[in-house]
Image (cartoon, rainbow, N blue to C red; front, side, top):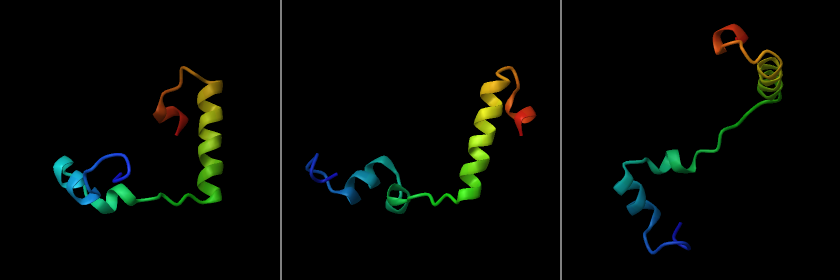
Length: 56
């Protein structure tokens, strides 16, 4: 962020009202979660008229 602007990360986060920890968070997904997400997407593409509750 500092490379693109002259504002520090701390200052930019405080201006926006965002926690620095939230900015740096990297989600960790497991293989099982990825497989489930892929399955949900395939059902959603196959059955376009299903809502999220029905796909679930």
